Image 1: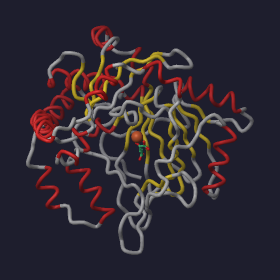
Image 2 (image 1 turned 90 degrees about the vertical axis):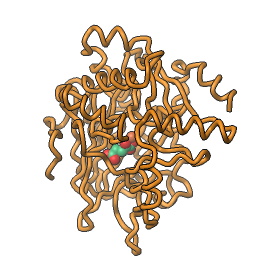
Image 3 (image 1 turned 135 degrees about the vertical axis):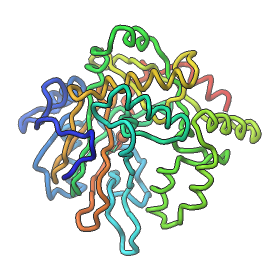
Image 4 (image 1 turned 180 degrees about the vertical axis):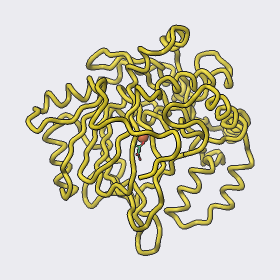
Length: 367
Ligand SMILES: O=C(O)CCC(=O)C(=O)O
Ligand SMILES: [Fe+2]
């Protein structure tokens, strides 16, 4: 597989500091301990398993994890299970039938971005809504009050694809002292509409998301794209969302999360961050906040801290969102060799409530 510039493969199976390859004989207890302490557990050699068999395999190894219902009834639900499909296989009408999420390959690279690359890309993000590859690093749903604790991906067909992982605890440890002092008590405000739009107040998603939607729906994205491009610049986008919300008497939903959080089971401190919907940090201005977030992200995504997992059929990788970042890597649209992954989404770990901030209740009260 040829990788875009800036992506590199880290030696297999895992870098020493995080992640682990599951041992055949590991007990459920040991696997959970490894997941919490090392951030992900990789199982290999499961090719050919049925979706029902895969659910059972997971349940036997992580009996405390309960699958959520988010895929049930969706077009990408996998048979009668609670798994969802991710990738770019097509139905007989040529529409992509999985959740096909286009990853950005432009701007500051996912791994090993230089300060200069970050500066240029941050500027185009703030001025033109142009997402850079480094923004693909994330932990899921931090723009909601109750983000996911664990997720897993199983590779049916790799399509030459990869997913990146970075150690969010080592990233914190290795921050330069000035940034470390700043991150420790910082609270980040997230606003989903920055990236995904908010249809209830007429704010459209960013262009990349609209193109993605059009691949599944077959709807020509031009009209939607024109609308998405009519409000350019993150600051203006937020101002437009606030004005529209005010006019409609609705709230453009925002939530707050601490940038550094103790893991509820191990106490290990790690960064918690989602750059595409992060708005501000503490009382910093939007541009100061974004510059700060990007600096933190750049350190987290240094080659010594990042692992690129090249998928092979039969791989099952479960990760702890509170311990690692993951990053989407662009993959080719290739009808001969499409990607097909099955994704597990679990109910949130109730222990995560220790990191819940009361600011989120105030927001809800306003709704
Ligand atoms: O498509 C990938 O490689 C990663 C997707 C992702 O971000 C996720 O499953 O949460
Ligand atoms: Fe994700």
